[in-house]
Length: 85
Image 1: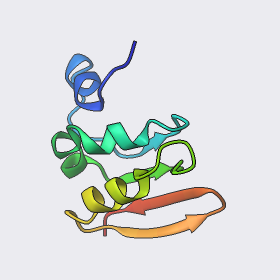
Image 2: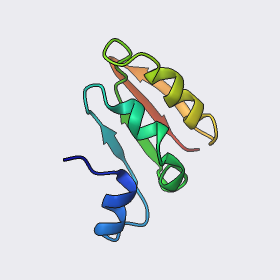
Image 3: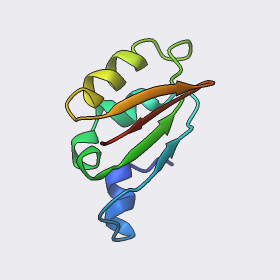
């Protein structure tokens, strides 16, 4: 069974995400492709790994959606870390 981030926020009455760590081994594309407009504006920091090798196009979708907001982005090992100024 899968859950959306917006669904979890609603279920647990979370209104802001200070830090969101996404480590879902290949399903990042769906997380950012469908519904991210509901939770990206209220997220301060995202840490993730992208797995284009498992699902081509993941990075394209991630950076397209992240580009709609103002983020500082850097790499640390395999992690992409994005935070708002």
